[in-house]
Length: 150
Image 1 (cartoon, rainbow, N blue to C red):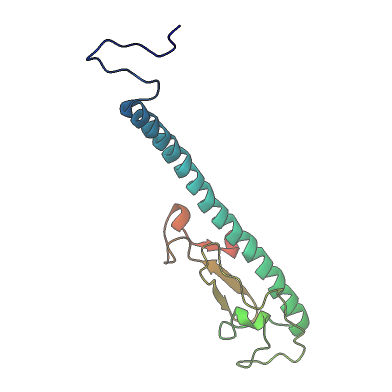
Image 2 (image 1 turned 60 degrees about the horizontal axis):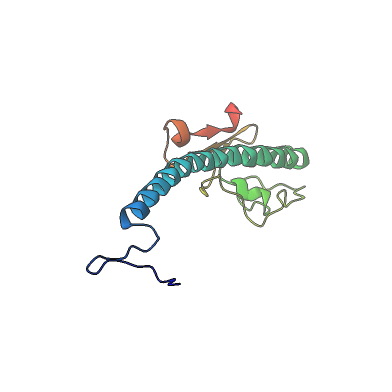
């Protein structure tokens, strides 16, 4: 018994497998699926950065309130948020500084790794993130986030 595939002389024997066109169609379908899923994941990642920014602001607010409790005033704009890490050496120097008031060695940035904008007269304060574009104003993810809006 002959187990060799037989083919007529002059005709090509077809081996099992995929053609180039079939592989190309599958790759195009996979690319489309990856594009759809990828854009959805990127949108969620940007929303997570916005949420991270809001959480960081709440943490800074708590640290500033503790600072005020010890020193009877908030740090001024001139002293900045660095006053939560090291004792201020400009402006009104607090006598009862008991910091650091944050668990890190530096002031955290917003979700996009940009520094927060801090303004204070010592009696009240405002913390603001300039959003994804790091410029004043904007809409959606580029919109500014303020602790007054939380």
